[in-house]
Length: 246
Image 1 (cartoon, rainbow, N blue to C red):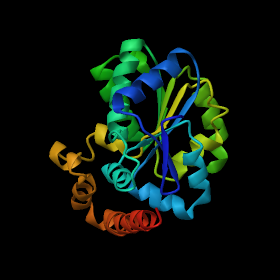
Image 2: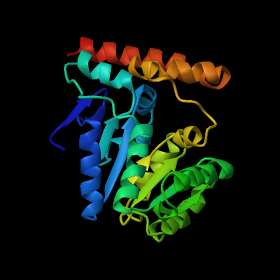
Image 3: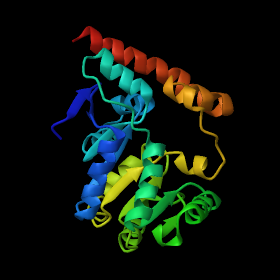
Image 4: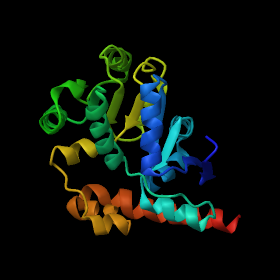
């Protein structure tokens, strides 16, 4: 894309939320496949040492900044992004769009009871006809091809994959040809847990200050401390290194 920037060995499309939605809707309505990826501080750090993840992300058709820290880094490095396009907000907007335009969605990922709750929630909020199908995220690599074929045959125009990194990125990259008739592919990380009510999202003021990671850390300190405290430190060092080399 002509508005794509490159920082921290990562491609990022400089689009607002509105522009992202318009682009996605255009691809779905004209039946053109669009493989989407999001990047945040933690993922960019992981990409530096994971060549497969870097390829899976950087070869996506649309890459947006999910984390506020990435937006700040872009400004420090002289390539300012317009705004953060949070994955969970993009997903919510696309569910609204699916209801409006009569698109169908396949939900893949999380535990069985969680993905069922997500489907029930969106069915209650909108209508059952936006649901093309769903499946939990617990399967082996050997099962992936069969699952991709199932999704492709479901009639879905949108696929949300709520599996941890790098599994979701690599799944979408590996099977994007099989999934080419599902016109929008997106990894949504832990968003299903939020929709299902298992995890609370940070207040808006914390989101605006880039402190969602702290809110999550306070909810699950034992599980998240290493990811956020060490990962954020590594991200800051990456930004400083690139800034010094400008």
